[in-house]
Image (cartoon, rainbow, N blue to C red):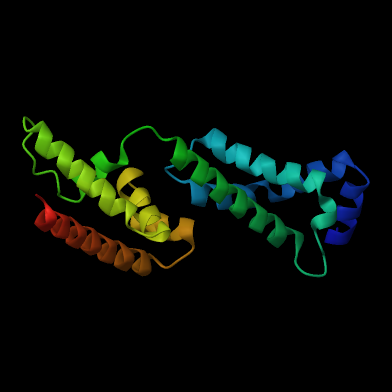
Length: 188
């Protein structure tokens, strides 16, 4: 069955055709959504993301143009977009202090536990440094040190080569260290 017939049937509100599309593309869309949401979301979040794609198809079948792309490609783009949106919402909702995890992971946790003032200063300093990073750098740091994703997982989620992830992480860590050292020099 071709994509034009599928969309025509869905536009005519043929629920059997939607069920056919769900059965045919669920695995593909699941893989796409899971690759973005890996280690950041639950199975239910991935399922919800995939379901949202099919709901979008049902509500807006006219937005698909069979002359521009295959239905599978169009649904894949929507799935990736919805997964990225979901990932960003999940990040905003997290209550655990990312700074604490990054401090320990990057080796800045050489602070005596009984010295609360020094610890608080160091955490504030790191938070300022992290806020000074651009959005892509922040996302790398969050994925690597907050969600503990491996570079290969980050590469799949961001659709970039693993080596590029490793290189960017290296440079972001170096940048954070320099920023921390500069703030240490500026300390009263």
